[in-house]
Image (cartoon, rainbow, N blue to C red; front, side):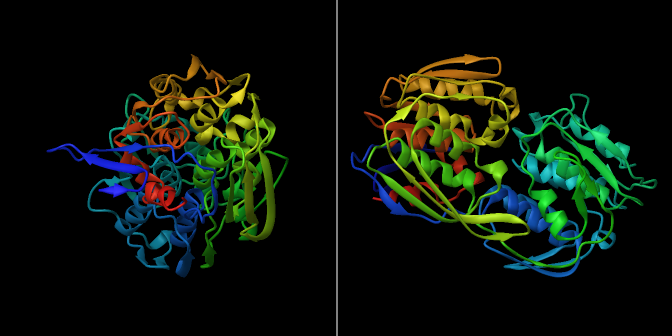
Length: 438
């Protein structure tokens, strides 16, 4: 098949595809709606499933991770038909006939583990080969503090056995990482406690769940980082999902790397904890305009325009790492076109994503003759002003596949991305969307 600048190939007898991406050589001016926000889609499905009755979810993300959450909830007796989510509430969930497959989605596994851990339902959560390697033991202490039941494998990974709790209780806990998934897991579990519970962590986490619980009347901030969960049921509601900034980031990068280009992404989630990549682009010298036009559940929504201008190197660390973690491989690509040496540090969490993203990012950049040096918790990229053509392995990681595709649209020669269609984990029509922009 031919998709404009993208040639798609599949080896005989293999389900894996490669795509060869070539630089169109012209500036970009386009307006593109990014797919529904993945983080908010997971939460909308879970909030609707926890509530008893009918909820509506509009604009749901189309990626495979979101589909994994929907499929998991269906095994528990939740009906999901188009926009409608009909649930008996957690107390009415049924025990699944077998293990619940979370596929490649760490968000599905961690958040659902929280809800189930303090429920009367026992379930085993499994995933694909990549998810089985990701750390899950950090859920144990927070959930057990609530009386939740959870066990993991001897290596601290899936499968997780959760639920059938008999002694739920309130708890005050503090975790040592700014993890929205661990916080959310605890907060959803704490809805079943007999009294308020509090969780604290370092700053830098995405606060979607906290905002939505406040909007539902189920919590409040105790301090800038400590959140109190007020237990009880959730009411059915309507959720209008905005565009995903983690997906839009690839479009923003494309515009930023080519002076004279401009991309508008309307109706994007503007949660402050999700805008780290925009902050990085702005610090590099790209033109950034973000206008809030509304909100969903206390989360701001608006339009973002990025204009390509000459770029300079930056240092990325601290809280900025947490708010741009998924986009850091993309930072490496952009940094190749920024004057100076860009440094990313304090990002050791990259080691335990869908791939070891420090290793896979380094391999990607070196395959394209990029100047990159890895470190234990990050990397440095020399802004040489170019990337060459080459062949890049995605390592089965959607973020690496998409970052390599964006590199190909700016590189001096064709870039072949192996196992390219793993991008469907977050954005099934990613390549077709790019192709339609010229």
